[in-house]
Amino acid sequence: MSPREKILRYVLMLVVLLITVGPFLWQLSTSLKGATENIYTATPSFIPAEPTLSNYVRVSETVPIWTFAQNSLFVAFVVVLGNAIGATLAGFALARLRFRGAKLIFALILATLILPGEVTIIAQYITIREMGLADTLIGVALPGTIGMLNILLMWAAFRAIPQELDDAAKVDGANVWQRLRHVGLPNVRGMLSVITIFAFIGAWDDFLWPLIVLTDPANYTLTVGLQYLNGAFSANPRVIAAGTMIAFIPIVIVFAVLQRFFFRGVEEGAIKG
Image 1 (cartoon, rainbow, N blue to C red):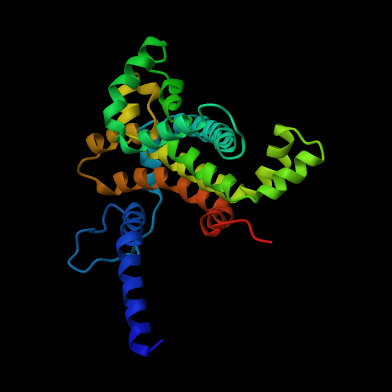
Image 2: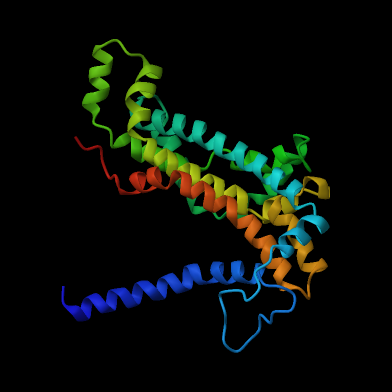
């Protein structure tokens, strides 16, 4: 690699880093700045002159943000659990089992990926309302418990397992559940972490669906509840930034815990060894 090409790559990497990470650093910096510090200076300053946590305290004192966070955690937990179990079982069945209608089911799953979520959102709301789950956290979580994309990812992960491993397990007398537990799951942990992260981020960041389903402020998720900050503190972007960072921190924690498995799932194109 020539020095010019190496410099170009580093420049491009810095540009991408500035575009992706820059806004989050700016929000963090703004949330830590005091009331007397000007955040609209001609020369931006990422390091607060007088760091303070008063903005976070003010958010928690004025808006029930911790209640909103608990609601979001509950919804995210249900969605993650549903996808981890449902997508794993569906992906294993489509990839490793032979049954009538498997190709039709797989074609229908692919067809649903073409449709944007807004197309089915009215039908979803009518279904949730008829089930008596409107204005409940279960009603918010239920449509996202099994994502079609997650099923497709798990199908690809199970398909990458050599067929010889399944055949050897059958010779040893293993049934379907034993093959899933002892052959399938150990080889798809990376992809399982990928769909876990995707499911958590999707449930945690979702705004439109909870806004449609929920009417009681006590049931609001964090993304919906944060809209109160824009009304209560429209002249104080420091507090709005603090609320935004509170919503962003759990995503960082989940990704930090699962990043090792995440990159393993992304990089593994097939089972090696």
